[in-house]
Length: 254
Ligand SMILES: *C/C=C(C)/C=C/C=C(C)/C=C/C1=C(C)CCCC1(C)C
Image 1: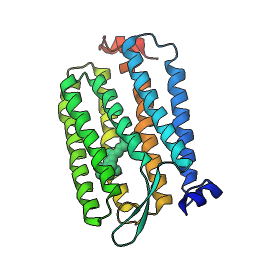
Image 2: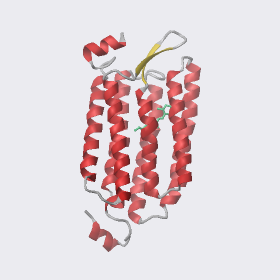
Image 3: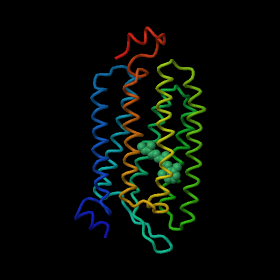
Image 4: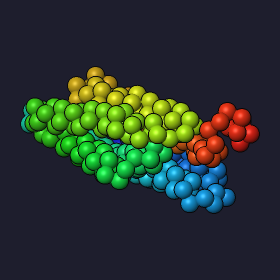
């Protein structure tokens, strides 16, 4: 049923394919912009931020394109007989892109390898338990895993603010200000994901697949392309943060 509808319309189960197409285009545009901007970057440390951020957009573009073609969509039949359409490909995307986003901000802040490993570990646990929540057949189990995943997310956000924030406080003024902007983007956008899951088809179903796909598309673009745009245009990356005096900052502004 799901497959044949997709073949006929290519627009998904509820027409959400339009948002998947827009998501694909948005990620590709972001990726091309980051590639163009990073084309003649020579400094290996700068290059690292470009490679990571281009990779984030590329992985998300591939994931959106695959979902647009109906790959990565599965049906979960609950014990009460209800059938849910779940795009599991999102979780495969997030398993790689959320650690890469944390790597970007961790490198910016100058966090230690040990702190980064902890952060990425909890983050991966959050995504895997989120996938488990989406695939469980027993409703109580779904909400139990949602709760576990959300607790892991709170740890990730806490760690980002306190531990990574502590590392950033030793950096120059440009780095500190870019760090707080990016940290706030993560705090605001990431916290909406579990809410979208809960009100969407995986949870209470207050919003259908059409609306849920739209919400995730906007969140994904903001959390990845918006994030990358601010990071890769920042003076912290592009302007050289070694001279934090106001006059020197003005002289190096692009
Ligand atoms: C680019 C993609 C990003 C930034 C995705 C972030 C995703 C999350 C923060 C997801 C969190 C979830 C929970 C905390 C509870 C269970 C459901 C999830 C996986 C949506």
